[in-house]
Amino acid sequence: MSLKNFNARTWVLILILLVAAGTRFIPLMGDAKWFNFTPVGAIALFGGTYFQNRWKAYLVPLLVLFVSDIFINYSYTGQWSFFYTGMAPIYISFALMVFIGSLIKKVSVANVLLASLGGVLVHWLVTDIPGFAPGLELYSRDLSGYSQALVAAIPFEKNLLLGNLIFGALLYGGFELAKSRYGVLKSNKQLA
Image (cartoon, rainbow, N blue to C red; front, side, top):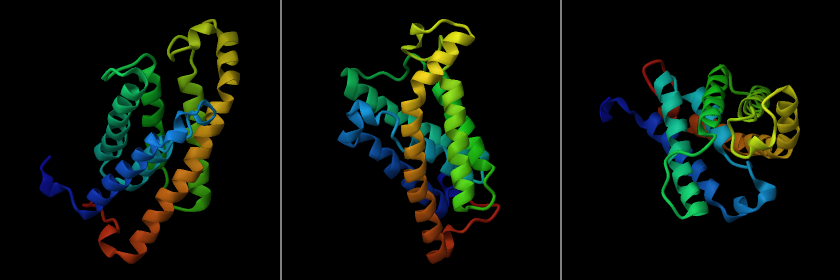
């Protein structure tokens, strides 16, 4: 893939996602009561909606998540690490959120709200499978343990939903407004 295949719309989408990912580093996010209040779900949904090229739709949001995770992990551990325990189900859940975002054919408040709810539901069900996520070894690897993990995750998923809704409103609303003012951001099948 050469740089000439990236058009203005693609660069704007990437820049928007990078700026959104930068909000993961706001000091407020280090407070445990705000865990999972991040733009990551909204980034995945947004990427799925606006990148018409499917590999970009998955690659860009997941790469943004991966790179920001490296810096987040460093801020917590003081060590550079590219992988962590429980990473696979987390990335699978965000890839599924990209897919959910790709189902949005017409951007509307209702569609973004439904996608945000669906993304949180997927994240909740996938990332809390006992034996995968860090800390879930506290629960047995059966239906009872899974149920306990799901209940314990509710406050975190509430924050993810709040993040999806707030950041989703900013991302989708901002880009739709920009599209209405700058024709170069409108899509056509060969772009983005």
